[in-house]
Length: 325
Image (cartoon, rainbow, N blue to C red; front, side, top):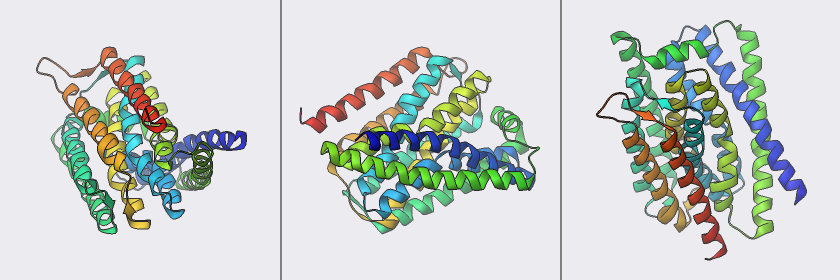
């Protein structure tokens, strides 16, 4: 058991640093090819922040642990809003200024509802996987078009923040090394995490879905937590919440498609009756909090505490359901 816990912790540490290297390298290469920082940030960086979840879902699906893969996708979305956004807002209130984010939030809500409707029959088929993958392509296209239109009209605050954060002075050779190290680290750490998580689940006699929803979801959300807190401390609030919105959309479209394509089959009923409705509820709450009829919308400390309390309550609910209370 000690070996499994140690392996899980080591895997999480490696995956945090690997995700950073992977995103930095990929973004630098794209910028060196003349792609605008806003497009890079919304698409490449956004997808890169979900790389830990994608790799973990891939490894789990290859081994036949579909519950771990689907649990990680849904659990990460709950953790991103409840844990990451909650604690980030507690550290520093988040003022939402970007018009792009205000357009992206309704799209996230639509993606969340569509994913629920796709899975409501209790089955994640290969057709479902292809539908989600097609949705990913469409979402990436929409993001790129939105970024181009925004730059043509006016300078968005998100564009300014991405321009400051995405490296412009890293040569391609160095950027490729970052990318390669990050990719190798992500592959190795995801294998370690899946191995340790499955062993822990078997040791405690619980389903891999529960481990995916809780421990693994929290662990793979650590890169988002680090990035979001760093963003608000640098006075880049739109970047902080943008990381979360983008990551959640990619978790549903990219991560959830993986088990459907690799190991399709039935999903556990609790995912439909408990976890996805909670994900929808907390996403809807973020949607309402992000619009204001009086001035700029803000996720303040009170709302941050509320998100954090909701997340802790959710973990408690999963625990009580697991032990049969």
